[in-house]
Length: 391
Image 1 (cartoon, helix red, strand yellow):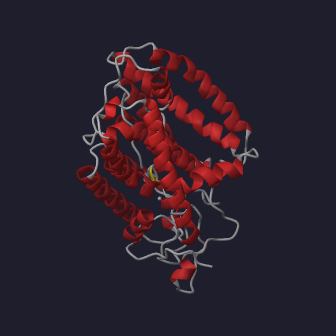
Image 2 (cartoon, rainbow, N blue to C red; image 1 turned 90 degrees about the horizontal axis):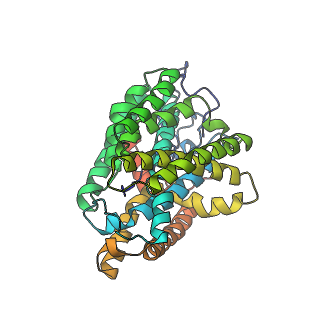
Image 3 (cartoon, one colour; image 1 turned 180 degrees about the vertical axis):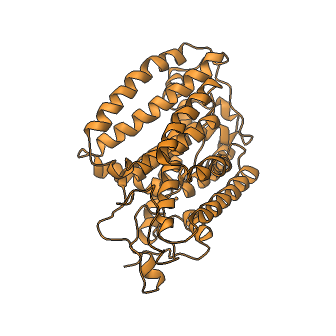
């Protein structure tokens, strides 16, 4: 089964239009959260700042009234973080980051894990990365005369983080891939009109599926899809409707059902298996997002925010620390990770996510963003931003 990897509101103005007036400040505003996911893998805060002239760092950390965080993005990112961890535990514990062969006689739990988890969550992070990139570009246009230089620096910093993670901890890191694709696809797309970006996204996805549908091949199309959703204002309206995600989710689930059946009946070493897994992964990822958006419009919203939002707001920090925690657990348990049962994998994931949830919740009570997100923002804007909450 292919491994999965990590990785990030909308302004009231049209995101694809540059400001006409000269920038009023060169101080960095809060940025969209990182998401391996998101500026994703995707990184900080999704609120838009009102320009200030009074010159303090504290002032630069304030957001304009009436422009709250889009909670749905935090929840979706935190949910995807858990799914990606679940898919990555055995590859990480194997240290080499190789794709583990399926068991000759998988248990029913193993089979369901393969159908519902494998390659189902990295598309969410890739989409969020594209969203976060465009949100940050929109914000940077009001703060600096050269916003693309800032985005270039941000991607280069992410590349450095990814290479360090790859060399020092785990060869399956996705951050470097995200940075390279961002440099080659996302950054050049900022010069294109939004209709061109929206048209290129499905073309790149279709081409990647024709070529085999590997996880990395899908990243460029998903990046552009996330960017197009932001530039057309879809992200700004993401929590305003329950009918659209409900209908879209049903359509995606109906489309995914026969493809998942096709995947279940395909040989894992056959040519059809990779294509079936890729198509099912895209459809189920979309369905998962729609289900969460619908649930966020129900009385379950407070519980979902409490469980997933802290993880999502510190997604980059949690993605990196998950590698350390899983490697430590692997040393304690010993044995071959590919021999671990699905129950063992689920228990490890639950333990790691519990630790990260506690850490994230306590940290965010005092600080505005995760430590790695803060360092990434510092490097992006080339000046130290405030870390503690400011009144």
